[in-house]
Length: 481
Image (cartoon, rainbow, N blue to C red; front, side, top):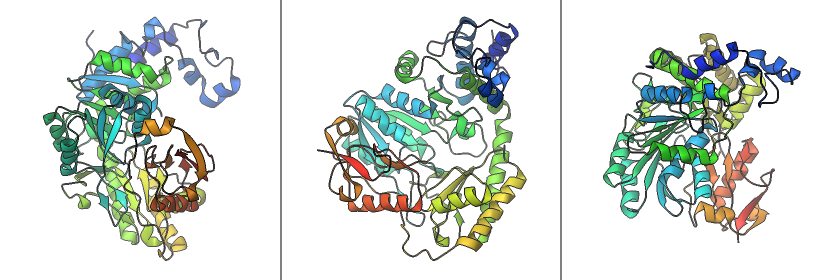
């Protein structure tokens, strides 16, 4: 059977299955919602009836041979990949499968240090060794940027035995590296190019967007469909180019992905892909229009800086994602997390995250003009009511790490717990991060310094959501002994 992008094989199989009124003597035990009335009332009968188990007519995510395979093939075609895999463990699962497919224990992988924790988690699990490229920084904004081609070249020359290079496309703030240049460099030295595109789904379908991983010739790309692609939370894609053995990648995925793949997530990937393939250009044209309007209006307020393509420098700020509404807040005397909290608590506006000096609002075509105006008005009122002197504020988000030992060795090594305030000079044995964005302030194997301790204490004081340590209160930290 020939499929086109107007088809949704999993959805169609699910609709046929539900019409057949099959009597369920399999899991899940809620039996289409009949066994859990409160859950059914909350989520709806259609949702619970669609929460089914793998069966022959619906295929199996671990070894797809029919409708899931067809849906994955359509996704590969839509994204310009050789193969696509549906992931229901979030883009964390995609990133980890990508790294584990490229590197084995003891092998090196070159990556920016401002990666999501999922990438470093993969190193803890499989024992690959990171070679960090410190990203560029923007001193005014205090944020990490992308990797310059020159810095990647230096890392490759110093580590010719590395197996792969990992690139963020884009960063959480919307900053892109020279992806084509880095991919070309990696391939010239016999290394795989892996792309974390957790925030870049729309690059594949929008107009005048930064180049996406597959178009740049990358070997693999992890794409978070649920973030900007319209599928359900926790659903993702792993895209592969011709260089990858698809059967081996599937085996790697199955090492960590559930054997009970949710058909709610699987079908949402199929439906979202269809929508993007048919309507993506229009969807993201509208998204960019909203974001650009908000950026212009917020900059007119004064005090804030909603940054964009004007910062592109051809190096570590090579390109910018125009859908990202990233706003620097420090000049009004407020940390990003403080603006984040005020927006939620006083204006009932939930944005993506706030950190030490910036906030990020995710804009999509699902927003409405009235809501964009409400967001702009809230920023105006916050400046009027809450702005203060910025003296004494922390002025940077990123601190270059000193890597002393591989993440796996540190995480599983002998450790002891010490007060964070007394940990300077020790080697960290766990993670410390603000979430979101989930970029570690400290990762296992890195030296703890006074500067890092000051950052952690300041982030806690300002109300950042801190995670990663065994100590739930983030007052003690495990260090290697």
